[in-house]
Length: 179
Image 1: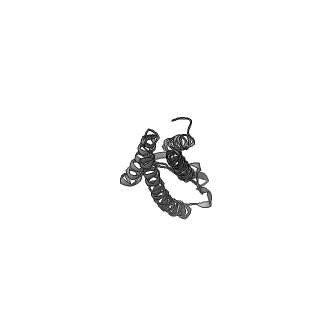
Image 2 (image 1 turned 90 degrees about the horizontal axis):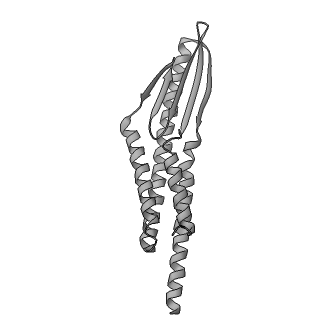
Image 3 (image 1 turned 30 degrees about the vertical axis):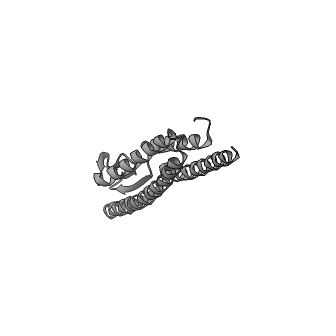
């Protein structure tokens, strides 16, 4: 079971999806000079929380329902990946589950990109409001972070796992014909 390449691909995808809980998708920083004192705004978005820091106050804000959707998507993907590993004797079910995982992960990536882009726009609007109260406005960072790429790598790993499961199935079928 563990020596099969698809198992390693699925384990790698599980590790990446678990790491997604701890890595932010996006981070934004902005500073503004207000009456000679620098004021800053920072925000980050991850599966667990959307946190914002304005003028030294940290708030966990955001639409919790959307974050729960991310958490549920991620949990379902992790569960199905683990379950798929233990279906090594039922390759046709493994193929179906790997295709389902590809679809779920693609949907997760699309949802992630949409919600992250909305957070980026919202932060840029909030940061531009800071510009109105002060001078020397500077948007330091409004970029995607490492976490945005993890589901894309997971998608590739699910695709590779599905291909290797199909290769195993073809090998078993060709061996059955020889008997």
